[in-house]
Length: 182
Image 1 (tube, rainbow, N blue to C red):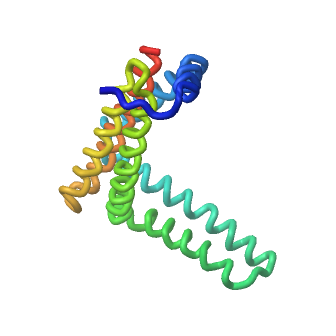
Image 2 (tube, one colour):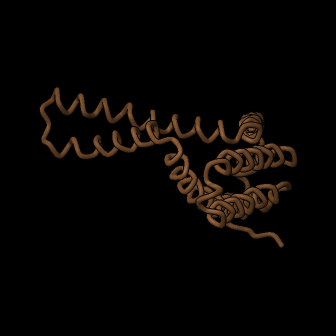
């Protein structure tokens, strides 16, 4: 059973987009595939790298915002948002084990939402051969979200890297397979 969404113009626009940017779709898929395999080979390292990366990404704007607020003599309320960023970034960097657990919870929410979006996207791609791969990717994302929460909190640390790896591999394959049949 194929689910058709949109009119024939939408289907044609999707087909044209896939055909016009086939190489970009494939490169995108290949990058996700490689990153996913790296995450699967070293899931604990992947989880830690993600933790420190996000911690650093929170610290940099926090420090910039605090500095700019001080230099420009902004109202004290401007410090509140940047302080939240600062505390979150420091928490992830100084408490990596707890940070990974929090990130695993956030990734679980992300996978749940991404799975729903991918299933909807599969319906949009239903007129094209290979659309089942996009549906499969969405279903895998939903399953991964379920696995994260079913074993919580014991599975949080190592599971984060594996989940990201599996998600990246399946998404990468779905992009490659979508272009293969178009």
